[in-house]
Image (cartoon, rainbow, N blue to C red; front, top):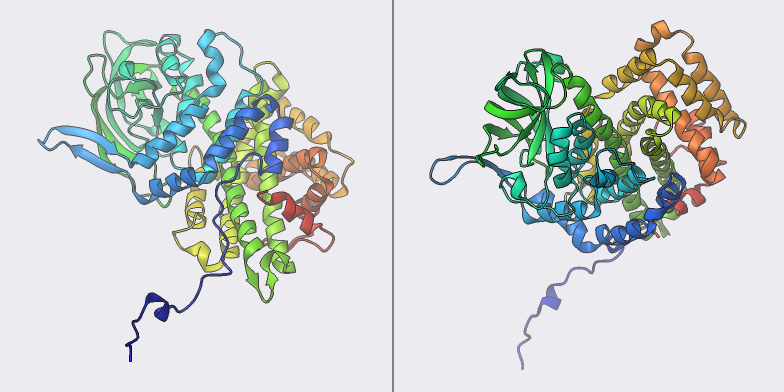
Length: 563
């Protein structure tokens, strides 16, 4: 008798079924109805072809896996070379550099400033900010960490413009669409990126408490060299080619451009002490540094550093809101996708009424965040030619950053729960998104700072509130809950003296009413009516998944589906 030879099949215990396919090889632009409508509405319709091509690239399985790799193989600090010489370099996995190259090729690091190739006084292209941010919205869904140097490079341009001599030298390098990872002087590179160093141990948000000292060389002055000694407690993206740094000059806190290499081709005296071990944002290197008489060049006048760096922060704050909305979109996409395939109790999860309610609620929050953020983005495109849009930008940028970034962590958690245990393991993207969410609420001004910035802007420019209310009045009469919320918001400003203590409540209401205004004017009624009934009318519980019976849940979920 032949002896039975055991094969792997004899030990098979189960087959894999009732699991969703991976959400990859999808076009993140054409599959997103709300994003396509937003781009067209907010003035970037001419970028549709470019965004369609980019959406295919970033939604590919290859790019999605680059995001995974960049967060699995983290940056490593190399303080010294093998001979003991000071190195102060950070090594990144090749996946990080590939992601940087994709973002730079699309112009996410500076495309709104392309007009400056024709001179520092040239006019910007209409819709350029919205177009760039649509790309940011998509790329952030795949990998957010490398967006830190991308964002700061874009935001450095308006600060550099305060010093034309530096702008003429550095802006052409920034506008290159070639990413160059080499650690060599900027003048020898195909393209550059810029970072930032503001906060110190003792001051944090209070940058006027900084102790880092800048001593002029040969008299100093705008555009001149200074020697800078001190430290930075958070020094973002230390392998960038230059940094905007705050330091105390003889006439007060000032803003400097500090390159990685000095004009003689030697590494600048920027000593990286360690990399931060962050909760999220793992692919990006954040560091602590010391400056040992490092060379920096003054941007503008001494004593105007906060004004100059705030110009940069204004742009990064907008990026925080839009990038957060993008991550919200990815979290909801993953949840809807999973629930569309997963069967529980003989029904697809998406067909279970309670789960559908949760998904629809998450989708409403995401579309509102997207609508609000991109409406503010349009004001950046138009501020140079429309004073009302400039006023809207000054007030609503911190409003949008505050509310969108505050709403995101709980949404990411709720979306993760929709995936069950699959969402709580690192093989998927849900956990990474959840850990990434808090950084945008903290970075470039925490929640309290954003609320206080709104108040300061209104004290300097009280008429700006009339501009905001004129915008919000456009949607009046379309929804009773909206009208009531708008009236209550106006009443909240009646006692300006007590506003600081109430400012979180008031700024929250401003954000929700502003989002409702956009949705009422432009989104399908099943979206805007459900949003106003819940976020403004309070026919809603304290957690997601409590939409009222009248909401068209199926239509809302279908609109959010990656198609």
